[in-house]
Image: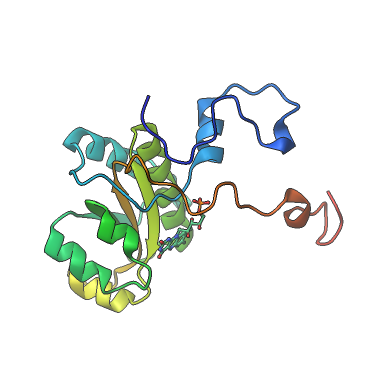
Amino acid sequence: MPTRPGRPPTGWRWPAIATIELVSETYDAVLGLRAIRHFEDRPIEPEHLAAVLEAARWTGSAKNAQRWSFIVVDDPDQKARLCEAGDFMIPVVNAPTAICLVEEPGGYEFDSGRVAQNIMLAADALGLATCPVTLHRDDRAAAVLELPEGRRCRYAVAIGYPDPDAEPKRLGGRMPLSELVHRNRYGDPI
Ligand SMILES: Cc1cc2nc3c(=O)[nH]c(=O)nc-3n(C[C@H](O)[C@H](O)[C@H](O)COP(=O)(O)O)c2cc1C
């Protein structure tokens, strides 16, 4: 069983669903997924990286246009240059690899978000840990990554094997459904 820092113990249920019988590794993975920022000092096995990229490739996109590409950054110097493009890049500093999500012309940020989540869930299933990062200065990222005209890279996912002592910053910090969900019109309670 892969190490999964910060994962609630098996059989634990969020209070909201404690009353229903649910046996699904997928559901547990969705609810248990956390951003991890500390990694072992070793590269990603090529077959693990390939499997994660395959999951990225199979993400659904608007009109199935697949207007994305992925740049795997594992060269330490290139990784350091990439870190100049974001304000909170500790995950990339600590990770052996960053997968940069490139929006091809006509691409949607929504699709990039779906790719990122697929990468994170697939990585988790393989015993890898991840953290999304924002490249606040995407013009700098474009220069570092040598993107052709019309491409943009605003997000990347830091990825590696989790440091066994790594913990997410805060476990289970989410707003209650009562503050998030409305019925039929905004403001009416669910
Ligand atoms: C769009 C997006 C951008 C993010 N950018 C960064 C970032 O630049 N640096 C960072 O350390 N974490 C970043 N995160 C991770 C968030 O801080 C993390 O998802 C949030 O704190 C929830 O953490 P948890 O899932 O471990 O509870 C980003 C997350 C998202 C969804």
